[in-house]
Image (cartoon, rainbow, N blue to C red; front, side, top):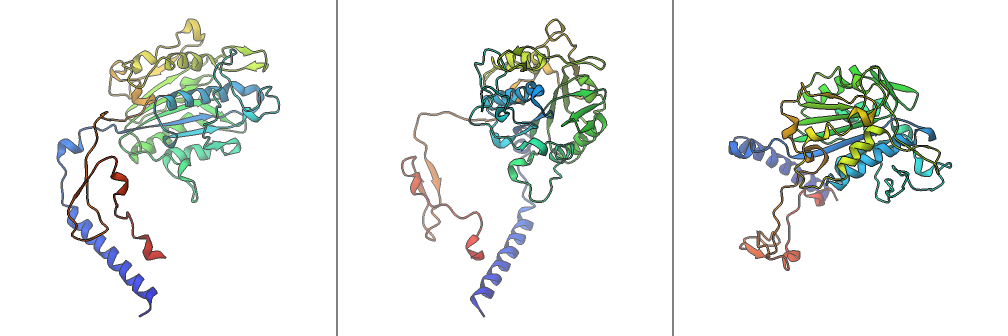
Amino acid sequence: MTEKNIKKLIFKFFLLFQCILGVICSDVQLPSDFVNSQSHTNNWAVLVDTSRFWFNYRHVANVLSVYRSVKRLGIPDSQIILMVADDMACNPRNPRPATVFNNANQHINVYGDDVEVDYRGYEVTVENFVRLLTGRNQNGTARSKKLLTDPGSNVLIYLTGHGGDGFLKFQDSEEITSQELADAIEQMWQKQRYNELFFMIDTCQAASMYEKFYSPNILAVASSLVGEDSLSHHVDPAIGVYIIDRYTYYALEFLEKIEPNSKRTMGEFLTVCPKRVCISTVGIRTDLYPRDPKTVPITNFFGSVRPIEITTNSVNITLTNMKEENEPLKTFTKTSLRNAVFSEQFPSKLFK
């Protein structure tokens, strides 16, 4: 028997052992208070700008500003999907290359040097957006471009661009309808891809995009009602175009005052842009949401779920040194932990 055949035989025995172990362990029941102790375990954000061309600079600034806020509050890039239809930072009309500002005072470059764009340019399509939400990614899609949520995930979906009654335009060449969006979110629910979902949209007639929703655990806010335009906030004379929309401007003004341990609530966030400053009427839908937004911390969607315990003392960790068989348990401190030997997660040497 050749060495190659021996390796194959060992691998087959390994798989058989794994199957037997799975059957044995399938009868093991975790305590119910452990399993059901917390349904919300992680936060994700899907941030989408659907507009191209220089005169839509504000839509890119909108989405990058929200991206900056959720990242500042603790959601890591690995749990943020950023879709930007145009690269304003590299546009030849930009008098300040490699920058995008959301205020004429230019005090915050929201493009920065740590922005991770997952879908850019012509990758921002209705098909890719629906595939992202439903988990029906094409073969070969990078892990960073997938929405890897689970039943414990709270998901923030933010959309900005040009829309109308019951549709949102993508790239000025196609559109997603409110019914298509509602069906995509229903697939998310059926496939247990979210715990709670916060839908936020800044576009003309924005409220029409959540009217068809029928899935549970959805809280939604829109910058304008059906029949209303969603207006821009101000122009930057150095750029020559509007640089942010009104609703997003006041939402960001609120978010800038939030810290990761904030006690501010989603109920407060839903009132950040009254009609006297927004000019349009902000739409809110709460009938699909089982809780009172006034009792829900804003960090449930805009922050990170990180239960941690801070200590200044040394930490003693008991580990098994797998280098030698039958070796007794050893205690490692932080200074000696670097010498610990951990067992392999998978026997990759069998494939060499």
